[in-house]
Image (cartoon, rainbow, N blue to C red; front, side):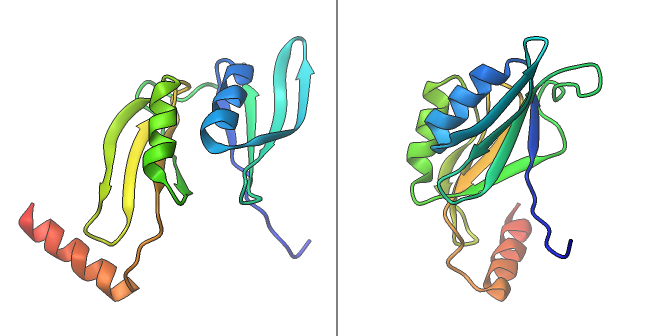
Length: 143
């Protein structure tokens, strides 16, 4: 196979609730859902962009993320991050940082979903790579 496709699988305590959350907040559509012994072992969701996201219930092999989130942050590029973040908060997400214009040319914010996963929602940067680095250097110098 010469082609690779990344499909993150989010392990959650309450897969059906997570599926409903991702459908409402991200506009996802459930493509398939498989259970074993009453637990969701694989649900594939398709985002409006065509990207895929998988969800499964916690089990003895796959624990939920630790309190406060794990080492992975999911990044969603969207037209209206304010609206996406507001929907997430209405549905039980916790604000990590508010959506705001960032010095590197994007409008971004971050939330932790009710299942422990952190998400950045934002617009693409309007700057070149060199412009982004210069903005980050200035930001670090001011901190």
